[in-house]
Image 1 (cartoon, rainbow, N blue to C red):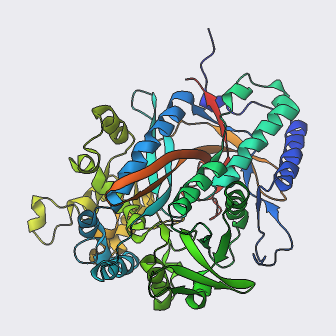
Image 2 (image 1 turned 180 degrees about the horizontal axis):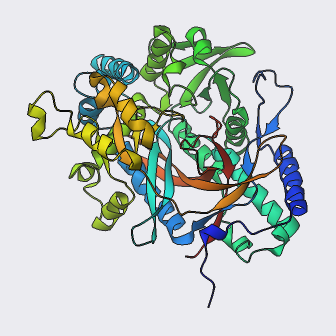
Length: 505
């Protein structure tokens, strides 16, 4: 009988000399194969050096059945969020600036108001593209069994797909080169699932491009100035050119303020560039625009709205970006809301989606006691009472925005009453205890620490006119962080990139 896998005994023990050797060959492999970042202070347009991205030395254990479940769920999630983005009434109610989150969240309100004005002008987007990532943690249930629980669903700038593929290749290389010193039967090639995320994400962009009426057009990547994670984006650019013969132009919002124009007859988006004639754009892929800091002036919002008015396919469109709001995630968990969008799905699929959610509620949740104006809303009272088992989330992407556990009561004391609608409370996911890994950052030795690993499943959907035209599951990533770190972003410095070893529990 096979021995039951124990998360608390991972990774296998190795002497310091072998860990040092694995670290050396991991770092050189990463640098040799484009698993790279720009160092602080480098200019993306004139880079002189690169460092390897932060990474884990061992792949992290994920139960085989839960990994397969996450892959199966992605197609349903693709359809769900595409349909949400096409439901104007729902988004107006939940995220709008009249009665929804946008009323109290300036950033959300600006996006929604611009989108509303575009709709009022009679501009309709015939197609939308979403490149999605659904993020999960393992959750230890009350009966000690493990489940899969969703952290969030990302609809804009779902990053690290191409670098995650390279981490998976790195771990396969370490297995081939060293067999990890034959320390564990778990470390076998059959337990290392393939990762073809680069091709999967590029296929979504190519599908949108192929639906455009000019196949000589280019794809526009909207990027942040000073972007350190440029190689994760470049690998997609290379894949599009080499496998699909589609060219890419990269510009910031500041660039686009002077380079972008709409054809007055066709609304085609045309971009001027310094090294040649202007180009027409088939698809706008946003790797910027997800945070208020991307819009420091009203002109930056106007540039975003100009792109939205064009005939180019936006990835994401403003409604799809709004659909990824945390408030939407919370409202979906209310009775009957999921059926509004997935009424044609089987009970099995609906139960599986619901089963991936933790308990959630809005801080503005009210009860009968709310008739007394001196009583806090039920949502706030529950957040105070259960603070140590909760996280509070605003409508933000990119990491570093949430409020956890013991910090919650003080935060609630200082949160303006008017802003409660913009926050949700979510029960904390409880990962299995005791799992460790060796984390490597550029120029440093591997550091062993207890960790938590987050699994992300990529997918894409091309949709419009009330239907999903095409969709696919598109690969995966793993991000691993120290167990004491609440946040999980790689770009924000909390996590490292990782891959999967499948285990049976």
